[in-house]
Amino acid sequence: MELPVNAFKRRLAAGETQIGLWSHLSSYISTEVIAGAGFDWIVLDAEHSPNDPLTILPQLQACEGGTASPVVRVPWNDTALIKRFLDVGSQTLLVPYVQNAEEARRAVEAMRYPPRGMRGFTGLSRASRFGRVADYHARAEQELCLIVQVETGEALENLEAIAAVDGVDAVFIGPGDLSASLGYLGKAGCAEMQAIIVDTVGRIRKTGKAAGILAPDEALARRYLDSGVTFAAVGADIAILARGAEALAARFKA
Image (tube, rainbow, N blue to C red):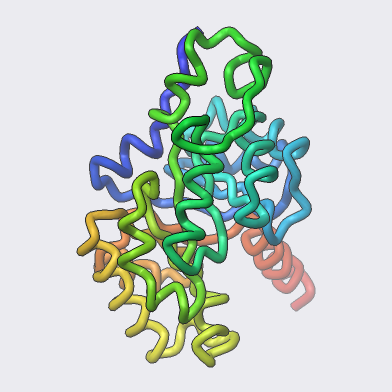
């Protein structure tokens, strides 16, 4: 068996714009629905959703027939957790709350086997197709992609150092926590935060790394894409379901 190709990583390196969707519903059925909807990537969220490796695995399987590459957001920058999500077959990880270069290096090491890192060894993981991918451990790194999430004032101060860490493929701006950290709790779309985010995108691009963001507001998403973001999540499955259901009910209740 061949090592699966990471299409998201290839397109990221090529500088192609990729439009994505956030997935909170933690269901392989809903994941299959949105994975085939035409998006380039979807986030399978295990930080703010009740996902774990056992629920992420069938969602990864559900993505295989769709258009969207799965990006798994892990709950924390934890070596043991990262190992488990990699072993079930995740190839692109989004690691939250990375605040400095040392924390970025820790995430990189969790993605790599020794001597370049500290990922634990197993010969029978789903990632290696249960031992059927020849030389998986020697070649896995070439198809793994690490995105680190900056979402605090401290992270902004250390942005260039974080992006410079070897093994970091992209930097993702978390507007919700970043706005809270900077004193704009719940106001990620205010003019002050928009200016900060646009400036941050420019700083990321100057490092040579790709910049990403979650922007469910269409106008904001388009502004950030115009500012240099190359991968943006422009909505969330649970919001589509909730707002769509409310709108349908309201039309018939009117």
